Length: 304
Length: 290
Image 1 (cartoon, one colour):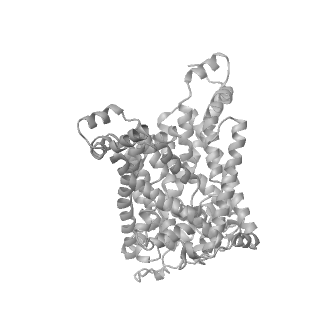
Image 2 (image 1 turned 90 degrees about the horizontal axis):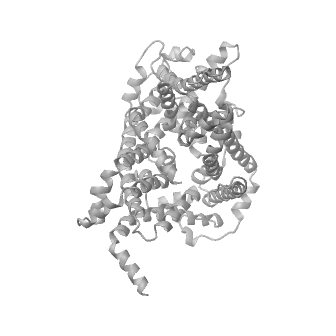
Image 3 (image 1 turned 120 degrees about the vertical axis):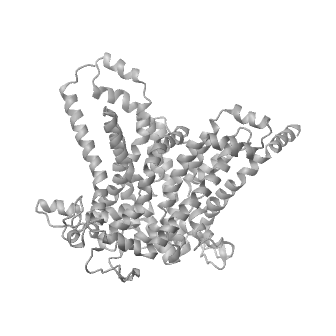
């Protein structure tokens, strides 16, 4: 009791600290936790006028509807495929690029290349899509002009569903590959140079050094970032896909996030769209937990 | 230095070639946008414009600058970037400082609760309903309040505050500074580099904001620049944008689109030198923690 009182006294002494933190705590409570618990409307027939407390409970009705929707499998497939391609390319490319940049000895050159490669990261997806629409345009796009030199007929890339996934993954690479190298370059800079010297005296070539020193040193960072990426697996990004979508490529570009927006905010099917959102989060969390367990066993690295 | 082997030389040369090509892939699309925005409609449509203007014209810029709705959208974006970033910095510092102090009992719990929001994010619809209940839809607050604190930036600032020497803060307290005073006159001035990093991250996010506007804003007069830009990019017909002086028939729509892209990118280009100075250190402070 005495202990508790002194603890309270201690807290009282620094009451201003707690007072200062109130706006921030309120922010997380109101804008993050309230809507999180608002997810319960996935199990209701939510009506704006009755609100969360007045709307009738309907169990898994909206989830059943989701699974029986004729296009659901296709949308899920698109979401998973894009997520997989993104891990395959957008996750690995920065690692390779960082290794290559690390070999560059001309500092001025390195600086220029890095400056240029970081820049696209700061453009909005709307602008990135605008640039790509320009480059890929069938009449005036640079890419079509270039393939025209080889006698290939212009291709309407964005109007053909068979190209859209490549465009989505490619534009993501263009925008973020340079940015992704920062953290790996930092990890590379942190490797003790004595290790390389010792390896060289032992007669190890550059390639051997990369294999036996550099890669093992990168492994923890790679694992952690990989797990974070898996956590985001289902969050491929509404904006990125939405800005490239058109009726001609929608068959291969509709993902859960864009579908949620259309079903929820355009057609006002609140509970149905929330059910899809809850499904998305559950799948994402499951993937994260599986990956975390596997990684803990394989490399000893884990998020929790 | 030892002599490099032949395979090493081949590797180095191909590495430089590859990186240069990659750099060009990043850079040339910008040149293409600039070139098209200064080229005649005919030249663009014939596919003659590559990386340098053909039949130079500033027609599109005259059009863009004459369009009131573009200016208004530009103004809205400037407003949410300036005011929004001030809100971001104030809200983030006010929470980051207390949870960086040893004296704050329960800081670990607070941090776990914040970390959880990074993993579990609420679905769109409950967020939308909340915004409606708070009467924030169709106001610019909808673009500033729900994003007031980013958990990542909060952790960056918190780690920065936490590594400030404790003696300075103790000394301020002994001199009779209250916590608010300590934060305002000691901690924040010492944290200028961290604040600049975080502030720049926030302002880029605010400038690029599109999704939130799409979700929460219906009133066209409140559209920020990205939404306006998106409209211009998907409409091949500019005749309804209200500028009758513009002859759509004789000019390329694409030229206008490229000019608007450039106008919308300009603030980022102007900020970039400052950006670059800070973001690397910012990324590192953030990542060391996790």
